[in-house]
Each structure stands twice: as structure tokens, then as C-alpha cells.
Length: 141
Figure (cartoon, rainbow, N blue to C red):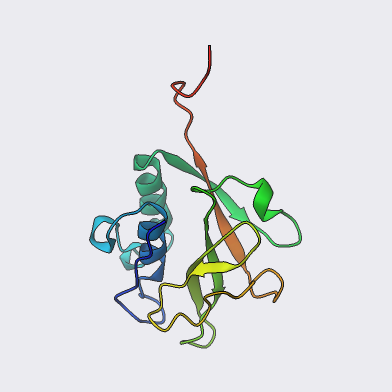
């Protein structure tokens, strides 16, 4: 995981999700679509296609008090997660957490969430469950 910082700060059209996905896949932000520029839920189709192109598939959201983070698939032990924005009241912000719920990367340059256990603090809305696609080449014969 290579930290990438967001470049656009905006209540609805910020690019924190693009920055966290770029970080998870060790890419530069320019290599990842700006998902929030797509209308309505169209961004999810673009997200799914991008993740699939990286060799993963989107399973769904992990929900605190229902799912256990460490028991869900990850990208090299890290997860994109959704927490309340500390810049825009009533908005959401994308960060990267580890299997214990600790924010290991906040794409905001001030890093307001860095080091916070968002599971313990009850600030975690959900995390994204992304699973590696098994193409058969990993199977032992």
C-alpha cells in the first residue's frame, strides 16, 4: 500500500475514494477514475469495472456489528473504509484501515483520521470488501 493523497476537496465531488483505491493498488491517482464524477449510482459500475481490471471483485460493504473485518477479504491486509468527513458536516470520507479498524492512511493532507481506531470509536460506517479473483493459476495440483 503506497499512500496517495486526495487532490480535490469537495462535499460531493472530492476524490478521497480515488486516492484510497490508488493507494490500495500502489497506483498514482491519475491511473484511477474519479468515481464521484459519475452521476447517481453509475460510479459503482465504474468502480466495479476498475477493481475487476485490477484482478479483484467487489463483494459488498462490511458492516460493523454484523461482519468482522479480519474475516473478510482484503487487498494485502488493507481495506477502503467510510467514515464521517471532518471537513464537511454530514458528508462521508474514504480512508484505509487495517484488520483491527485502525486508520493507516487518510488521504486528507492533514490526516485527521490517521491512527484512529474507527471500529472502537464507532465512527466506521462500512468497509469495502474486495476479493482477489482466483483464475486457477494459484491452485496447487
